[in-house]
Amino acid sequence: MTAMSLSTPPSAERSPPDEPVLAVEGLVVTAAGATDGTRRTLVRDVSFGIAPGKTLAIVGESGSGKSMTARAILGLLPQNVRSEGSIRFEDVEIVGARERDLRRLRGARLSLLLQDPFTMLNPLQSAFDTVAESLPLSLRRDRRLARDEVERRLLEVGVDPALAGRRYPFQLSGGMRQRVALAASLAKDPQVLIADEPTTALDVTTQRDVLELLAQLQRTRGMSLVLITHDLAVAFSVCDQVLVLYAGSTLEYGPSAVLAEHPAHPYTAKLRASSPPASHFLERLEAIPGTVPAADAVASQCAFAERCDWARPVCFSAHPIAKPVAEGHASACIRVDEIRSELPRDREAVGVGGAGARSPTAASALLEVDELRKSYRTVSLVGKSRTVEAVRGVSFRIDAGESLGLVGESGSGKTSIARCILGLSAPEAGRVRLEGTDITDYEALSRRQLALVRASVQMIFQDPYASLNPRLTIGSVLAEAVRARRVEQTDTAAEVAGLLQLVGLPEQYASRRPRALSGGERQRVAIARALAIQPRLLVCDEPVASLDVSVQAQILELLRDIRRQRATSMLFITHDLAVVRQMTERVIVLHDGQIVEEGPTAAVLDAPTHPYTQRLLASRVD
Image 1: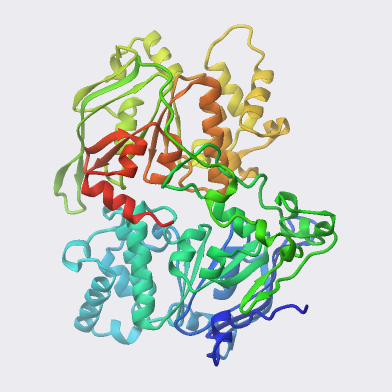
Image 2: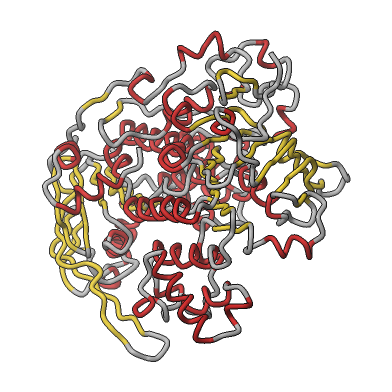
């Protein structure tokens, strides 16, 4: 069997093919070593193509080479990184092209939409001015023509020029910022848009809106779209073709419908199975053990062999290339013919059937929140102020050993409630009680009471890198937390080692610093630090929102194990209903600072009664 050429998408092979608007052949991306002059491989021999008007997803975990591939296409590689092979955009060869020639392509014919719109948007420019600056020079010369064109572009992406056009990035929601960034990316009518994780940081309904908008604009403009994501469900919902990367190499390539139903590589199948379902509870979440290796570390073997349940000695003997398994469908698994029937096609086939919600371990209230109210005063750039009610009369309780979900879109009041519970913000009205003690005003607590509260309640943040001191080693971070308990005759080093073991990290990680760890490993350290205090309540604020789906499954299962071992209560804040299904017994749905629905998790998710909850469930991309 000969290697498959991936210079044109499989859809084009079934009919007279269009000339691909973008063709990548044998792409290799390498980076210079820090001191010894050697080069390390980031992307190895990747090939694909995309026809006019078609959509391609590039999928894989962090470290797979997705973003480096996108940067190579745009000629935006860092100074010490270079590309080899061929990247042809119509009649232009991008590899080796001069910077002035690449500037003519960027924006006008090839455009980029980034994950974080703050990276693209100038904080000192209004939405209107951002789009105006991105227009072709011929339009910008005529102020009236430019104004009309900007209004048209903003309306195209669902932004009201009269209301949001004069607002600055910090005055816009995450979804609105992404729409403005999209309008700026499309201002010069590019033929190919590369969208790099454009919905990762968005809540579920906003994610659905942005994906539908991208698909609509792609169809109406006849534009090609390259969507970079770590979420296969997102890729399947939007794209015609899917390219699966791992450790810089192609593992699978083919039509999205085929990969969704009949994956031909263990990595694709396991990646799909790692995403938790919103439809039912799983006794055990399916995670892919380990992390993505460096490309050079697996240059002489199957890149996925170390983490593969189907690996055999032959998988470690050579580096396989993608070969056809059907028309337009290629896989780099050398055992695909033997094992394909065994690969899981969905999460029900992983051997962990659904189950009902678990019951709380005790009936006594650990935390009580009563009629909580919190508002913020905002001041515009022109000096006008207004009061925003973030939390409006919210009441709930968390029993000892119970996990309660707090669900809602961005701006629903979830984090404001958490800040009031933790004493990081003072409410205007209402009460917060911890085991009967009023902790509404932390400043009114005695030193002893404050110490008891801090020992009872700990927080796990969404971004572990921002919450860890980059100058301290992991051992120092954990030792500091252990000493904060002020327990005499404590073997700090032994406790640090025990905490690392508890969260599944090797003991030698104590000497490393946060920058040397992956995102999932940093989140494990953040969990270990919270547990070092031995709290009774963990407040988890979107702790897996920014993680790959396989790492997300590892962290969620870790938190469930900790609950089983320590009977720790949890307040689990998230916008993801699938995560809520797996992590909580009860759920509260927040909208505009108010509770619109609450009850047992299974009851609320299986038969939602409020239109807002129904809309959240309908927006889930599965």
